[in-house]
Length: 258
Image (cartoon, rainbow, N blue to C red; front, side):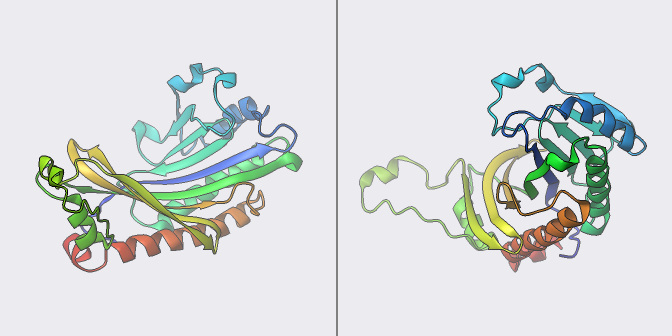
């Protein structure tokens, strides 16, 4: 997808969830070592480390399937992109200053390569899940406009609730004040799930419709714990998020965003 002059993108997230074969699904005992080791290897590009309040949450209080971020690694002067780390999870995030995949991909590749290099128990390391997600925001007045019309006319998504002839339908506005739903499809290449979610949020102090396009691998994916395999998966995942976005905005909305 070519770059739009009125870019709706607000964030791109790559997420790698890992486990240790000896202890999974319990916390990886190597995690505490990884925090300092990763910082030493990425500090030239991400010199500012930010411990988060989630550090105070006891490990036993967090369900094994829940992944929490405990550290952020920033560029100088808190510039994006950022790297995030928590027990069993590594992410690379970029904000609305994202330009193109060809610039973001090498950053992910470098961080992943350094993470794999410093992991101390390589024989027992496995990739649990990979995720690539794009979030786009469209300012929208939910009170005075019908979000279902916007979805149908601008994003090619049709939703209709038929209330029949019941007179009680006159008691409420036809304009939904909120929305939150997603659709997911089985994906063959790369193997996993292709999904899109629509929900309401406030962006830059304005009510907005968020469109989240994502690809996630199945848990315990057949992706080897090496940089080449992960980036190969990532390229295919990016191709499918691009497919979702470019086809959903095609036509009228695309012309408005050019």
